[in-house]
Length: 204
Image (cartoon, rainbow, N blue to C red; front, side):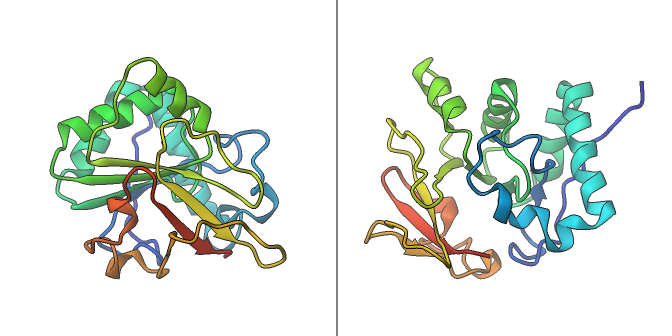
């Protein structure tokens, strides 16, 4: 069987070159009823380049073929970074992957990890089973229009200000400044979101 190794990128124009990101393929790792599917930014622009798509798929294959090595590679490749983004493209594939994300954060304590997800059932079940999310891993539930995740543990929320319809965004939600490179280290960054807090993005 062919050996795949995970590739951590650092050339995302929104994140900046100093913030590594771990991508998986959009669509097959996302929830089947994802409300953003038709307007997904990870299906457009640079994400459509064959090389970008191939790297995302190879990352998924690396996880599926050798999850132990995948975990070691992620921990090693992100250990010198202050801020890391899980999944500019794609989403948490399964419960084992979520547990792996938490183990990486617990091992690499000086790195701050961020993950937006619509796989809220996985996270809710993980917490219901008595597990905890490390302090240096911020998991943010992503809403879309009137599609709002069930959030019994009051995790941070992300909202999208849609172009063609009103969205009931909380009044206290902070607006994303659009470039993480200038924001990540500030007190208002998504990496610093706490329980009950929200951020909103303009549709892109």
